[in-house]
Image (cartoon, rainbow, N blue to C red; front, side, top):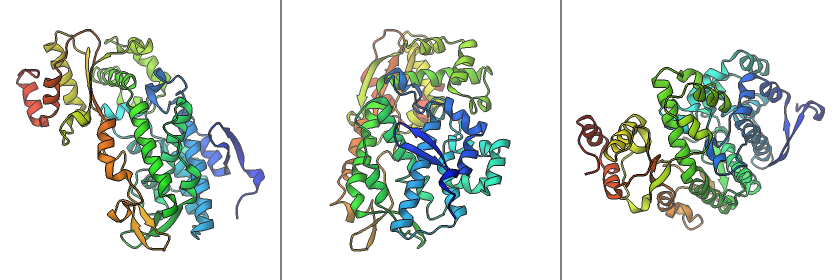
Length: 426
């Protein structure tokens, strides 16, 4: 039986207006692990470019919870989904807690080599106050963790971690709203009302999209592309991110910070610690927005299609390369930053598609191509959004062709050149 309206708490939200919290959700919200998210900005250093981008992971968590409630109600009405109360509660709480393990400053610290925030969720779910609230709600931390990490086989798991989950629906809408840009506007209502259930590859029911939602899905994918190109990977945001990664990595390497403490820090708390014991000068420069300037900025479309992964996935090697390049250009260590972020699944989408005839295919199948045009150009759009940049803290001339040739080398060759102190730019 659903709780009476008087048992629900209503929170005012600038994006979704009224967000209604069930008693179990309210108890979870009022724990230190979740309250920490009030002080963790959603978009890291994006506020240095878009002053309104100071919204928090807490707001986003409430928004994801709100959309999960809406989606579950829609599925019950149109798809005949009748999960029991325990399953409904678990899905809603997983949506609420999907970012509970998130670091300060968005995804920068994951790029810096720290474990992914989904891996850290287990630690927070075991925190005494949150664990007690979950136990009182009759919800298993293990089931929540499986949903958060995308390993659950529950029929509705795709609402929490999937191609069309409530995380994406909220963050694209919220980030665009708070940044004051039109790029991330998506038709959330159409997408939610187009959700249904269909048999997955193993015959078990999974979250699916009705054909009537294809245009809205295409709009969502294009919104993602635009937000990465104009907000998440904006050159000044990426400059600040590169400087911040170097700053935190050095603080950890010099044992001025512990990675375990960084994982539970807030934005302001981490900045305070970094400013108090900074030996690089980067903390002050970030605080005063003295960002490294672009000396090279090339779209990935100017590079061969099959670029090696090490510039985005091997922060240890990247730092060694940066310092060697800096030395070759007459700069000091920490005055050159190489940035070539990757997000291979940016425009990826793979979930069942229910035709108006009732037939089921997959959105990613060729059969959907006539209706959904964006995936056919997804790789080109991704390469357009992705940019190879070199940022400098002091003036120098960067040999563009040499940098391009360098990032196209296999990781092993680059590592050997650095180790053997061979030149990287000639």
